[in-house]
Length: 353
Image (cartoon, rainbow, N blue to C red; front, side, top):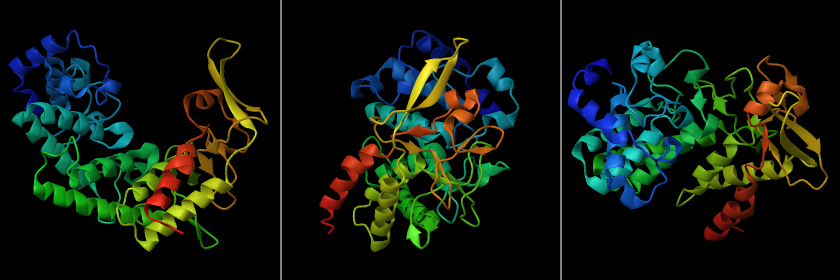
């Protein structure tokens, strides 16, 4: 980044001037009307994003890039700017740049997009998975990362590019071919990591060891387990295969059967301030509550588990510390639409018996 910033002088001044009155929030940059992406505001935002692009081509995470990097940001040690696919890192920036390129044809933005796109291709393991960070960062970050839909986001972008869909129709044929091959490898990885119980296909962990493919630990509250959240995105990637193989059909059917077998019944999650006025959540018995699914299930028993920063497993949501109860999603209806709409449409489309 430092070499690139030596040349930004006038461009940086322009970005500051144009973004001073920016109205679009960072988390909504990919959800604007098509005509907005040709506006001065969108082009200024794109110019700002380029200032954050790492030398490897990707972008970091959890950073609002609608304004140029501050002096404090630039003063952080290099590892703090590490490019990643976690929490929408890199894929968010590429999607936005593609929308602006489609609207404007800007050659500078296209060159930056291509560097970022090539970063995604380079980051893929030979086995088809993606680590959380690339270049690799020691620790659980090297695992195949399904967590928070990181790999799903990458595959969605690459698949749309390979198929020439908007807003990626401008991407050259060579990169589209590479994207198609990367998607095929990614799907092979998804099939390879699907967990079996007693010979039956079930779901996936949020992260799998990149060598053994076994479910793996991430943070202290993210244990080797079956995921009621991340597995939904992986199934949707499989549903998007135009001509599903018998292996893909079996994977989908196995995951759907597992989802149907493990819902949490008779509970709702209430969010309300505690006695100190701060946010809190509790699971409350409610026979009329709609079905929920747990974020984590024990690998052998399919029992919902809840685990806090102390790495201690509980079977009662209310027993974990308040900070995690209020700050992390352990129970929700993630598979509901998949089971009610997406899966039936998929079966009908492929005329499955």
